[in-house]
Length: 403
Ligand code: ADP
Ligand code: MG
Image 1: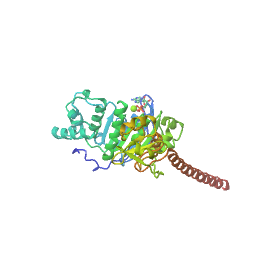
Image 2: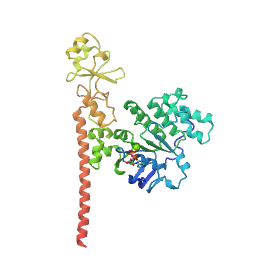
Image 3: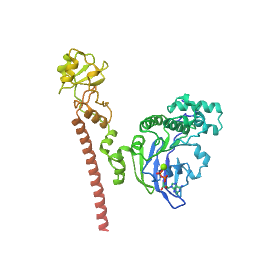
Image 4: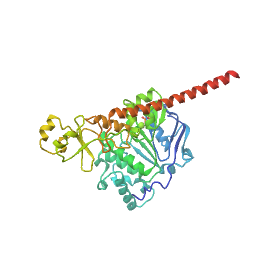
C-alpha cells in the first residue's frame, strides 16, 4: 500500500445537501431544492437523465459552481465557509475521459496533487507507482503519455490521480461512461473492491441506472428540472419505485433484478447422486434421475450434467469413462448464502431442472415458492402499515369533528 493512501486515519465526512438550488445566470434552473445526504464511507449515486442537474449538484460540493440557495455541509461545516484550497484538498475529483494532462507522463499525472502540495518528486513518483498498482495499472505504463493508453487505462489513471492525496471525499462524474461495456464492468467491479478497503465518502454521478444499482449504497434518482424523485437503497428502489417516472427509469425486469439483493436463505435442498469425472459411464448410468446425472470433480465441485441415456451420449461413451466432453455445461451454479436471483438462475439454467451443487439441488419451483412466500410477508407488512395509517387518520378526523 502506498504511503499516501493510508485511508481510515481521517474519518470520511458526511456530505449534506440542504435545500440546495442552482439557477444559472441565463435563468436555467439546474437544481431545485435538493435535499440529499451522502453518508460517511458510502457510495451515494446521483442518477437521472441527461440535463437533470447531476453535474451541477456534484460541482457545488467542491464549489466549482456556487449554489444560488441552500447550503452544503461537509461534516458539520458549511462548505461556503471553508477556504477553497482547503476544501478542494480534501476532495478527489474524477471525470469522464479522465481529464488527464496530455503532455505529462502517466506517473506525473498521478503525482500531480502531491507535487502541488510540495512533496519531493522522488517520493511523489514512488507513491504514484504504488497507486497505479492499486487501481490495476501495470507500473510498466508509468512513462507513457495518456494518448498511448486505452480508454479504460486512462480512467484508471484518473482514479489513481484523484486518490493520490488520499482525500476523504471523492466526487466522480460519469467516470466510466466513455469506455466499452466489458471494460466498464471490470472498472466497476474493481472500484467496488477498492472502495471496500478505502471507505471514502463518494458521490458518484451517472445516467446509467444499472451502474447506479451495481455501485450505489444509496441512490438518488433525479428528474429534469433538478428535482429529487427518490432516494433509496438499490433493493428498495427496485422493489418500490415511488412513481411512474422512477419505475420507467429503472426499466424492465425490476422484480427479477431485485432478487439479486434478496438472500436466498434456507432453500430445501435435495440430495443428488453424482458421478465423478473418470467413472465408467455404463456403471453410473443407473443413478440418473429424470435422465440426468450431475458430474463432479475429485474435490466434489459440480462440473456439468451427463445424460447417459441420450443416444448421442450413448454412442460417444460406449465403454468409456465420464469426461468433460460428454457433459452439458450450460448450467450456472448458485452458492449457499447467495441471492435468490442466483438460485433461480441456477435452477432455470440446469438442463435437468435441478441446480447442482455439493449441497444438493434445488428446483425452480422451490425457489419460486420461497420468493412468493417472501413477497406475501412484505405485502402483509404493507397492509398492516396502511391500516395503521388509516386508523391514525380516522382518529384525527374524529378529534377534529369533536372540536
Ligand atoms: P447533467 O449532468 O444531469 O446532465 P447538468 O448539471 O450538466 O446536468 O445541467 C443541468 C441543466 O443546467 C441543463 O439544462 C444544462 O443545460 C444547464 N446548464 C449546465 N451548465 C450551465 C451553464 N454554465 N449555464 C447555463 N446552463 C447550464
Ligand atoms: Mg453531467
